Length: 245
Image (tube, rainbow, N blue to C red; front, side):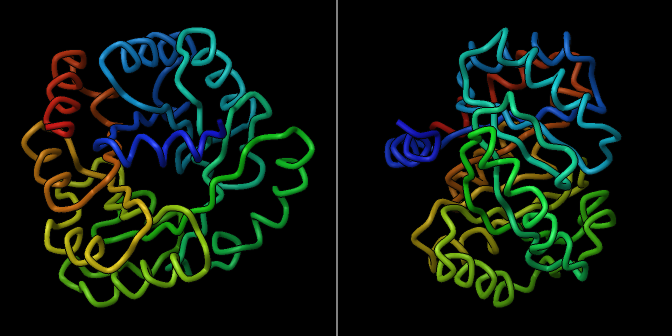
């Protein structure tokens, strides 16, 4: 079964949690340990990527360490064509829909797609929308941020993603955001699309994760929980339990 089919099957059964590891924020050894922890607690996939990567070697070493320590699918979450890894299982082949830079909309994809085909990584098409405050992802992605209360624009982007035939739609507030995407926006988007909705950025507690899942998120992504929480096991366990409930 492909990674995409496996995710879609699981989404039909329950809400999911994905763990995001940024190679800039921990060593490969630490990433390996964290991926094992995530698998044991109940995360469904490991995403590897970040907005400020400096080399593909970083990505390679992190992906290899994750795969040595975990049986979860490893999905690249790339910021550009030069940060791909042949060791991953899949890649979010995502268009940053509200970027002013065509590189992040399509041109990086043109550069990276031959490599993806050559090494056999599974592409998972996704529309990626960055919402206020956006944080580093918004700055590096050169985006026109969608206002937190602009539900109509968010719905328009989500429907366009679905109509283009993409498999997933991702609402991103930015890693470390003081506030996550609003529940009202999540609910409005979910009401209008038939593809899975991923939500990330600023989700640091079980209460917040539960609210986002209840509002309509099919998959919750957390990343800074790993980077900053001294009680990461307890926090992550509570988040995943809250999402599944």
